[in-house]
Length: 480
Image 1 (cartoon, one colour):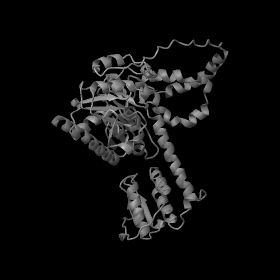
Image 2 (cartoon, rainbow, N blue to C red):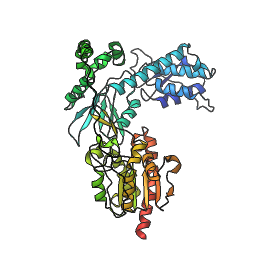
Image 3 (cartoon, rainbow, N blue to C red):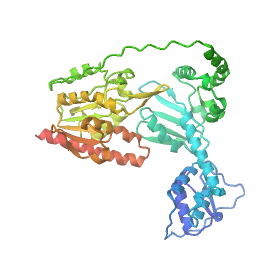
Image 4 (cartoon, rainbow, N blue to C red):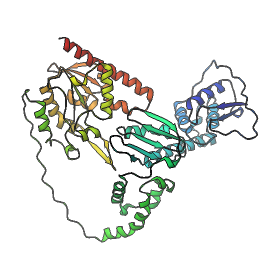
């Protein structure tokens, strides 16, 4: 008998390496016992001695669909998952079409485990509720969740993308995930008593939840199917669910009985700002003041303020991003949030003094979608890029840069006047009709969204190399 102990409950690479070695040594599934470090040994079990295995000389291939399926199944909490996966792997060597046989008991079991894991991951993304601890700028958001399977690390990238600009922790009995705006760290699980019970914004959230509850569309069975009662204990709005359901019939009747309302009259819309022809002598201060009243698109209605460019009145380099984020919208300055911090670090590493660069965005107002108390970044549309492009052109005419760095697709669209694929133009110097040179690279927020640590490090290094072109330009301009 061969006893294989993996490094963790989710050690897919360890399972794959062991499974390959076992299969190439022709060790049958029934001759292997799999376990994880947390598995408790049997009380009267004999000492485990695994016969030595020869280093395999050959190799074999399995389909990518099985590898993807195995990566998901290994996150399940069922102890037999390792043995099941090896048994299917063993059979796949002689039957390459096995995964297509839905009636096969092993295959049916694999898909059932995979479905359970995917459903648990979905529940985590749907039912995690963050509570604010402390006050800005040192506040942190903490949530408690009780997964059925080992999904925390695999689901964390969803939260790093969605809540990239806030520091948060997700506590569970198994493991805890923490995000500081740059990297994820995983720590051992904690008891529920360590999780916060409420925060200062909870009353606002409950008021909002009650206001959007539509009794006319209530389907209790469907709601409980999507939101099982076992999750209610960790949801702040759970206390409202039963009273709202009980009142639904009464409220629906009142809605039906109420007379129709008068249609709203169209309100007079403020006329958009006329486009003007401007001289090169306009100062940035004057442009900033004029832009604060911009109504060329609808984004001004939801934003806190116009976030105009900043930097030297005359700069050799002008860096253009996409749009202000949540932090920039509140502060009124470009690149002060997590993406700005990432950019500052890369500029310093590349040898670029930010103080000598003019910083701006293609779009000057924050575009977002409200999600409760959070504002989720939304990519600007073509109409909004075109509406804001005159501001970029006037900034450029005023600053008169020799090199414009377009960070991201939105910035490239504004700078070059057309949709431009980043991959094909990145790192190359382009020249405009007015002899201004353009360098296209990624936006620093792209680096924050990468879930894989290795990919993030690789892309960050590539980003720094792009910025070294800027450093070289600044050095040559100084020498001239």
